[in-house]
Image (cartoon, rainbow, N blue to C red; front, side, top):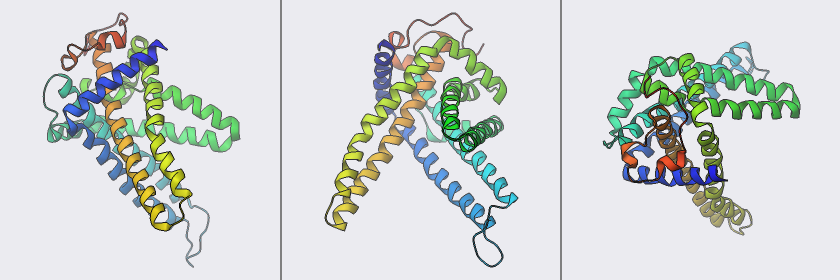
Amino acid sequence: MQRLKNSWELGKISWSVLKSDRTLAWFPVLSAVVSLVVFGAFAGLIAATSIDSEGAKDSLEPMGYVFVFAAYIALAFVGNYFLGALVYGANQRLNGHEAKFGDSIGAANAKIHRILPWALVSATVSVVLQAIEERLGWFGVLIARVLGAAWAVVTFLTMPVIMLEDLGPIQALKRSGHLLKQTWGENLGAQAGFSILGFVAMLPAALLIALASSADTTGTWIVLGGIAAVWLIIVVVVLSAMSGIYRTALYRFAVDGTAPPAFAGSNLGGAFGERRRGGGWLS
């Protein structure tokens, strides 16, 4: 309970940081937009491989599976690219500087040679987990969910490591796992806390959808459904930005043991708890 309370406190601080520099919210927005474009492009390619010469739908050809895996890699790259830009911008803000959009994108561009291999690793894990779900039925779903949750915890600090320490994917994964030993409570609490916060924040949209489904007129359904969709988009964007800020602050605290200067006067140290012994920042 204390861990969740601390995570809630840290979430509020992350929200205040986001409000102080709304540039950070643009990275989740761009990530979503570019991901939709990439998804649409690959969906068209995959669909084309399942249509025979007479225009009828057929089973997926081998090239279609290549496109599927390529889509996983492309989507993982887009997500991690903009997360990297967010992490850099959040680190600038935590240092008391302005999170300039151009500088953050430039920093992500400079780490493409790190982000792309990490996207390949992430995509491979996603494909393996998806295969487990499909081949082992309900037991596979259970196993995949457990493994997926464990993977999310272990890799929570991988992108800050890549962006701020300039390490390759395997070294960054090991480094993230090492930092997990010092921040496991805050890490688990963060992911649980943000999940709960997201659930609560999405309740108004669920209520609007319920009202829309019972509406008598099409116009009312469209208006209520549209408001719900916009609300969901806002929630996802804000939570994604806050999560990026959180993981950057958690990384900074894990590696140097002190609260980032931008959080001076807050109870950040108390929210994170006492750091275990470990190497210093960038060690």
